[in-house]
Length: 525
Image (tube, rainbow, N blue to C red):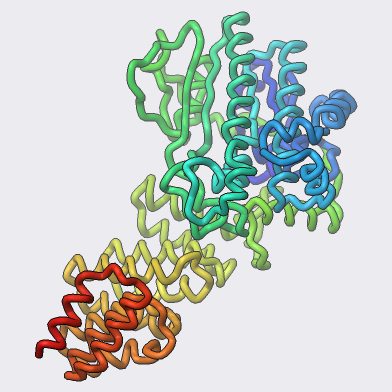
């Protein structure tokens, strides 16, 4: 909610400085805040908040009836309109929507499209009537469309069925075409009003070969796997300097830039700087005690029932933003601001590690996340990487194993990656320990057992190597495993059994010239 925010937002600063503002749909902005202008919170969006009471959604409260009318009209998307995004007969679209489950791509699409229409319509209506000095609109659908449909977007991923690719493959392009149209409308209005338009994203998204096939975007608590650190910021208007190449900016630069455009102060403790090179005549805004002097007042809201809260939680889980497990909560840090959740602490740890380079603060944040939710995989794995990076391999491997046991998305591949990393750096003892831990945790993994067997083989410990993979000798249908079994039998001097394993491998995968040569060499001896 808006109460999670620790300091005044740029709209509070603008309003307190005598500027008129308009805010529509901004993420985590409920309940609405009292400003000079208008404010419609994110609870107007039907993607996540349809089951929650909307008392407190608008300021001034007199806007609420009109907001409800737009929500009822624009939030209702027809089967025919959805057919523009997916290749499904309208009858199938109608049947899918009847189920009402957000996990169904068609149901999610209907809410994404409805939310986009609602937010854009409210924002344009209120902007046209009020012409605020600062207008802020958040379109949630640009993120949600990725979480639902990025797995189906071209180029086709190997883990996506042909039928699903055909059904949903154009949904993302169709949606972003609609967003482009909306941006075009705001560009025209900015030109008419002599305004500056800034477009920015709070993160990027994986659209190409970086998409994680093994981690569904709709799988609980997997949303972050699909986010990219690099996002987008663009500016357009008469005062903008056209750039011939892409530049670098930070999300922390947005508030100082807006402040500079509106001649507003910035708190001395705030990070970032104005993107002055992108604008004619822009100077850094003045600094002072802004956070301590600008008030934040919110309108009254209605208590959420247990049933509505449960439905809201289900929607968050359906989009991958909430895990299904219960967790403890820290005491609020003061006032009515809620305490930080385990995901908040994990995100803070990532920020302190990647942006600040403060490994001590990052470690403390990750530890807090694990304390709140002992089975939370992400901070456990982050602690493993943090300790490996600073050379504490003992703790690194312990945290790696713990994260795998807690439900790591792809433990087998991760263990093998760590083995390769340690082996490449000449840390053979640690490389072997990672494999040994992997064998204990995943005794059915042929890939981990194979690598450990080969480690012992290279040390000429033939019997120990055989013990690693012997349990797969009668059941394996994997040529790589059978070839290692053959290699180890040869190491033990059992030529005929070695040939037999190689022949089993060839029967499964005939095109293996090296195996053919090995059999010939064994028969000559």
